[in-house]
Image (cartoon, rainbow over all chains, first blue to last red; front, side):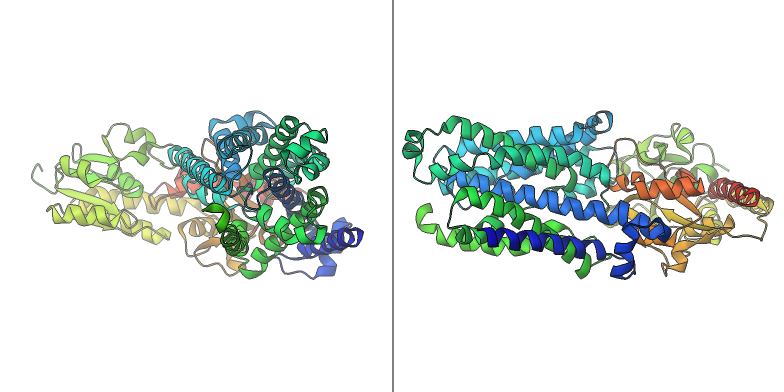
Length: 327
Length: 262
């Protein structure tokens, strides 16, 4: 376990350095890193501090948030298909964010945008949990997720279509696919409090989730208050997903892929998986964000495209494996 | 003069709206597009209030019973094709990409409306104003055009031509942009332009225009002191572009004065 965590942390750090040196501006890795600590580089220091550093930080924060949320939801629902993006939590958060931007709430209140996204995410998690029921049967979970995703996506598109701003309609893609391009420290400041609060809540659920692997009755006899676990799970997930979606749009599949890959490495223990998935999520989003900059640097390739290309086949594989349970 | 030229003209494009309003005889222009009333995009929003508006839909335009429809190159093809099928003559105007294109479009609009005399007057005034601008040749500060989604405009675009006419060198040209394209924020920052010419954002925020509030853009704008001066005058190839050139030339003079005093 310790070796795994060290390996994951080391990878996060290495990818962070690569992320800082990858970009359309043609400068050497050494110069760009030196410019972080030295103002004499002129515009390069500006590029490093205001463009690359916030982007790299956001990839770590948001990736960790999404990985953690996926691991927590899968642990609670005991279903490997639960993922904030797939079951509509991210799209409802995006709906909240879009409403906040279009009503002017985001401009008038400092934390208006992330709070609105959090409210949207809260609705999404609540609806999914209510529709899927406490057992979280695969079929109902996925159907509920599809319904909520479609509804939230349609409403997001509607709000953007009705906006008097001619650019708004083109942004449907951003809210559905997510991107970290051209974000600044303002956005880091917006997401950080929500990610930290949500992460603390979700990480504290480890013991309860471990107990749940033995079944609900066993967990209850072990003194786990299932209603409390459920409430905190809803709040924690909404907080991390809401914050992440408010600044980066709905990035899917990270919460699905990462826990799936790491589960065997932590012997399927949810409390360990929470920590490992947070680091794994940071790694996956960083890799995706480096990839979009290296593959098509001039096109603003959306993050969600890359994560979906990796995640969707895995999703199919999981469905295939759980097919017996679905019928 | 009653039987001279088309008598019920409908324009369905922002730029042809403005040219038509400048040149049409009283009563000749029956309708302009709804965007002509949008102060953010239209340099003649007040004038447009006097005309009924259309939304560029075949049905409403046909019901106006026009004897001529003027469309832009980007008007929906299906709409203009349907109008033609219904027997309505449609004239399509290409967008202007240079100041000489502007002269050309004025002339063409004069011909289409059979208002050649009015067009000749407008052209003469345009040439007079252009000559009066008198941009001194020395010192060409480097300027970058930057708008929503990080788009910049190169020398082969109308905005790029406005920039050049105002006596500025276009950073996009240095970097090999010809018309317009996305310029990554990093590249813009590294190019370090003297003046940053941004657009005025639309009301109701959008993420596309968020980029104009990015610390890097704000820093560059503060450094050069130009900022969000690009407005409706820049959008269409009409004589109003000269106002844009004039505003920009003033920014250039201010910049050169500041530089000399330093």
